[in-house]
Length: 634
Image (cartoon, rainbow, N blue to C red):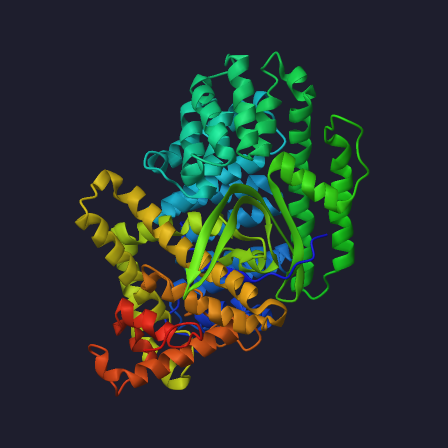
């Protein structure tokens, strides 16, 4: 077992399909209050707030629907009460708002409980109710996922005519989005399976490249890209050449789509299917695909038990070990098979499959972080004269991203952690955020809805700040995000970026800004502090405080670097992140008080924190440096 303490950064997931915070105030009995309590893992408080919101006729219909949906999700994912979940979903649909989004959540619920026909029907209903581009995207994704889920365990040669028609419909629904890649990772992966099952090699290659993006030119995806680029265009039916089929199997394996590699390898339409499955590398790929599926299931079940305060750590760890022991005989060794040990097993998983397994503890909860390495490189970190060359591992195709990420369920997630040897980046949290923000900017309906929400939240911010000096201000958080995104988009246009390249350029640039700030600056500071303090390392609150200061101070676009600070856990005294955020916000208010005359448009008669976005980018950096013991003081 890995015996390591995690220092994690958290990334908000703004991608298409991620749950968004939608209420106008953080006052009691609102959906927002429920979300804040939920993110802080205070489930009883969250239920109370959601129930109060749902019962209050004066609550906006969208908030009542969202509250009922979240009550359904909690009943299903945490409480394991599916009948209660169905009741809440029915109530949410009866409200009449956000019908498509509610059906999407219902589809997810049914799939997780293996009620695949119901899941497909709910996804179909989501498609029928979708009216905006965002809803059509989410519904198309839900439909593709539902189709694939119902086909789990069904070989390509065994698909019925009706199932083939459903796959074709999934492809049709996704076509507007596949025509303008990149798509989200989830859509890319779902569409990759749809395309492989339809023998649509061209679409499969588009979906694979949409997923790979920046990893295509390096790491394990580099060789995979070469193999798939040559082989997938030849996949137009059962008559694909066996050499091309072999390359598809190997390309999918190299790029760590183990389940899909096994699916293609087992295609009985190939005369070589039996011989291919007997090859040692293919045989262990099939076994490994089953292993990681089982690992996800037992770990998610353990997380549910933890949420209900009955998690049996010893029993869960024994399950993990047992699954490894079950896989061990399926692995091919050139010489005599060594005796199993967990340490040797983890090493072999990394060597053979790129799997990075870390059993550790996060926030006092023993949990698992397990993904697959897509990049392994070095980068120099330089902060205030403290320097180090640090190795970065980027991991993807997560088996588990820790207990908190599982609970947060798309709101935010662990983005990485640091060790004395390297920084680990969880790629999914960075890869898709920019796509969601792009859609919020360019879709007129979504932008108008966001404008309305910003206006409502902005009005409420002063009242929140008047009640509590240090509190989450939804309007401020949304305004900062919008200002930063608009500025980035304007800069790209000013550089002459054409309309055809604008989406790709925006996604790449925003992803890099977030990665540099949230990951390299934040986690780099953890590593530098570890070097600096040695055995006298301070507690986690102090380390998070220092890393969050660096996160903004070294950001190219500081307005887009506040998600983990101006966050719903801003005043959570039970969390090291929350306590660090409280200290930072207190320092920001002090800085604004001392520099009032230098802040353009500041109204000293109003609470100061809601006016924080009046600071320039340089002033934001200066405010953070003023609190950093390493930063030179002027």
